[in-house]
Image 1 (tube, one colour):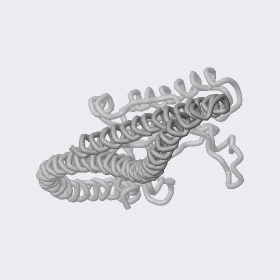
Image 2 (cartoon, rainbow, N blue to C red):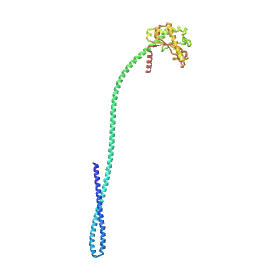
Image 3 (tube, rainbow, N blue to C red):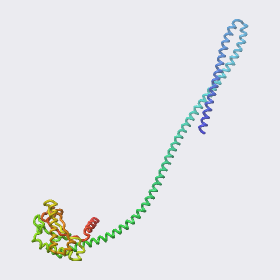
Image 4 (cartoon, helix red, strand yellow):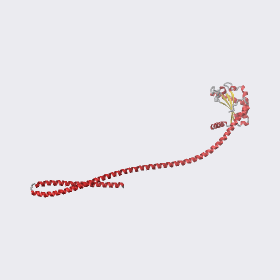
Length: 357
């Protein structure tokens, strides 16, 4: 509506300016006609004056005509003056109209500038409003998403709490079983210590018994000649006495026998020679001791076949001195050791318990 009123006002002033210009043009034409008529009258007057010189009568006639002309001239001057006044007034009105049009144009320009500013402000406001709406929508979506995540987290926490309760119960049960296992290990360990103590009691101090494993060792130099696997005759008597006491203590007693898993006769060599040749020699020497047990009837053969076995270890388990250097004489040996039932499991559990501590 504002633009329509503005356009109507502009059209009015343009029409008014066109009207004033048309009137001015008409007045100029009138003045021009008066001037032309005046000049034409002046020429006629000169001609009349010349004609007056011809005759007095004509002069009198001319005077009369001149008077008419003077009157006409006076009237024309009056009309010219009026036309000038009208022209000046019209000019003033045109100037006033032009000034008014300039002011209106300036006002319209100012209004248009203000309108453009308002449009720019409105556009900026619309953009900011749109951005704010988009931000609000994004934040609302994020809030909804976070609420969903929180809901899922709450459900996960509830599930984890249930799982934790179950795991706690399982852990408690494992702790209880672990404590029971420790007691069993302690008992089994105590059994082996009791067996070793029994061996020391039966064998006395004359035979060296390993305090941790309960094993006994015979030097190969005593039992065999160099690179031989046949038992020396002079060593058989001492070997028979020691093996009889050792084996009878372990498997001859029913109460002790129920804890024994196996008894192994191990042959060992030093690092001289190849591994395979030493393996063959160590196996042959261990088998020779085993054969001696069977032939000497030191212990019941059924017990021997049930509990006793032989094995060659070659140079895989050397004995080192305090400087870490191989003791070749000590490495050449026959070693007899026993294992209680579940001993390997006990060792693994002991290692595990050691790590836990």
